Length: 291
Image (cartoon, rainbow, N blue to C red; front, side, top):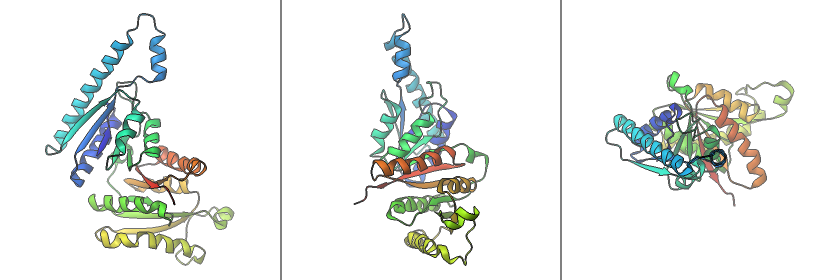
C-alpha cells in the first residue's frame, strides 16, 4: 500500500487512513515523498543571481527525509506492528506516485497539499494520480474527520466498467463495518421536464435501471453477507447526484474508464469534479480497457 507524504495536515490524514487500511488488509505500507522543485521553481531559482540550485535541491532532500521520518513515527504510534518503508524521490510528485502505483494494492493521497515544501501534493496532483494510476487510488478529504463514519457510496452504471469499483466498495464496507449505498443515476425525459430527482418504487420507466443495479451487486451479497446495502436509483446529472449523496458518506467509490481519447475526456471530467467537490474521501478504481 502506497501513501503520498508532504508534511501537510491533508497528508497526515491520508497517512492515518492508509495506516488503518493497511492494518485491515494485513499489508505493508510505503511512504513516498517527492523532493522536486518543478519547472517553474527551477526557472525562478535560476533567474536569481547567486543562487546555488544544487544547495536548494539538497535542502529539499533533507527536508523530505525529515518528513518521512516523522511520518514513519506517526504510523508506528498508530500501529507498532505495521511494516513501513520510505521512498524519497527527486521526480515530479505525479510521476513518482504513478510509477509506484502500478505495483501497489492501493494508493492514498491527500486532497490538497499545504506542506513546508511548496505544496508538493497539490490538488492537481491528487486528481492526476486518481485519473491515471493503473491501480485504485483513494483521495482522502478532511471533512469526514468532523463527523461520525457513515456509509460507503458506490457509483454503479450497470456495465462492466463499474465491476471493480463495486467490489472495492463492498470489501471496504465489510472491513470498516459500514453500510453501503449503491447509486445508479439516470438522466431521462422526466428529469429534463420536471427536474425531479426522486424515483418512486412503482416507476416502471426506470425498471431496467433497477434490474441492472440489482444484477451489478448480486454477487457481492454472497461474498460480503455482513454488509447491509441499499440500492438507489435517482434522476439527474451524475456528478451532481454523486456529490450530493457524498454528504452522507465516508467514502465515495467511482470507476475511471480507459477507453480512448474522446471518452476519456468526457469521463475524466466526471472523475475530476467528483474528486474536487465530494464531501467525503473518494476512491477511484480503473475500469480497464474494453475489448
